[in-house]
Length: 219
Image 1 (cartoon, rainbow, N blue to C red):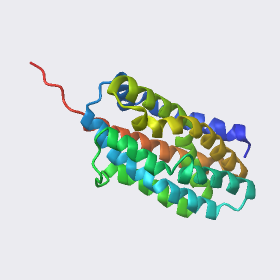
Image 2: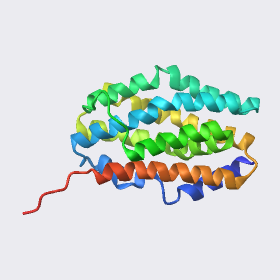
Image 3: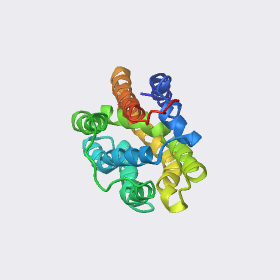
């Protein structure tokens, strides 16, 4: 498929599912999240961050096109060590917001992780489309999170570093994943369906966080 065709599919899929438009992230930007909400978010997002390198590794193994494989491998190499293992960087954020060291995955988190691990085993095209649905917006999301953490929640540079790194590298990662997808995809319906499923899973992940928001007391 042409890169322009992939871009058009992703625009359609994300038209009503841009994550920065979700109420949870809007409250993050506004500084109205409770500290406990940030901690719970970090504890759940950790599950996705922990599985992401394995998902990318499985995609590398499944992609036959050498150019596409190289692009996914570059993404994986960054996750594993540029400028440090990203899961280690994430723990700096988790510590800064008081996340527990371990927490069971909630239903929406488990569904999100399951989606990515399952598509990585089933189809390189579906896996790349699912990754693209998040990666193409991840840089903007990460930049917004980092700014909000500093300005609204008093988090230091160490605590925001994970998001600072991703605000830069995810612009590349998004381009790499879409280029890889364009190199291997044939059926636009497969791309649409996988990207749509991923977008819905991410939205549900934030819906669940929002559902656990503290209820304001009224007099």
